[in-house]
Length: 285
Image 1 (tube, helix red, strand yellow):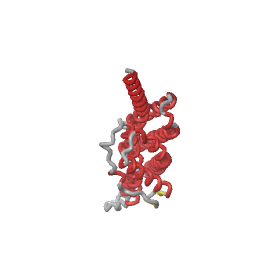
Image 2 (tube, one colour; image 1 turned 180 degrees about the vertical axis):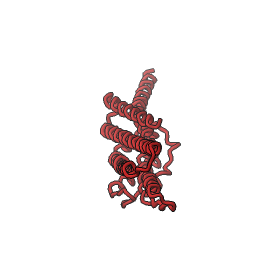
Image 3 (cartoon, helix red, strand yellow; image 1 turned 120 degrees about the vertical axis):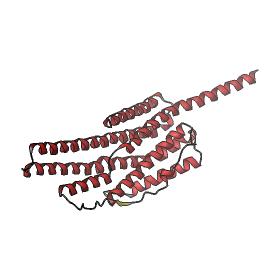
């Protein structure tokens, strides 16, 4: 009877430990799920380096009344988009992995997006340095190790700690490429539109009032579209910063996930990311 009681007590203790681990990982899973959704909004940003190149080229042809339009050379812009996409997929791949690991679900994970390499060099308006290339390689190798070695919840600490530094580099690079580089060329494009409008308004005195109103209407529509795109980039930048901050908090405290304070902080990061996602979605309406 005593042995049976001891066995029952041991079983209950093991159950409590297992359930405690699941509860702790629930907060990790909540954070990674929110981060996953936030990162994926990259795919909803309706602008790119190539699109900026095309817009600038089309405006040049229109403004110069080119009956035989100038060919739009956008290869460098395409390279910049390609590099940005690689960085995005690497960051998303890691977060997808964290979501699967914290949910004990490895069966649906795919690594197709991580099969391409990111190398040092200049790609259009972007420059990839050794630190960024190494960060991408580190995340790719970690993902391969995690899923071929069949990591589970007991390994999640190593996964998070090992990924933290390269993940920060990737998130920072993605943020800079969009909120600084892409936003910068978009700002230059906006300035070009303003100059074109002022040139037409001041020099072309043959336009009727109706024609002037149509030109002004199109001008303000273009500015409104650019402003929306700038807001999308700024809002997505806020998401990336929040994800990076939350992951740093997770990495710093991954050995103390049972503490209520850490749970509350992870919950707050997840909640903040969801709020920014809602803010981003409102811009699409």
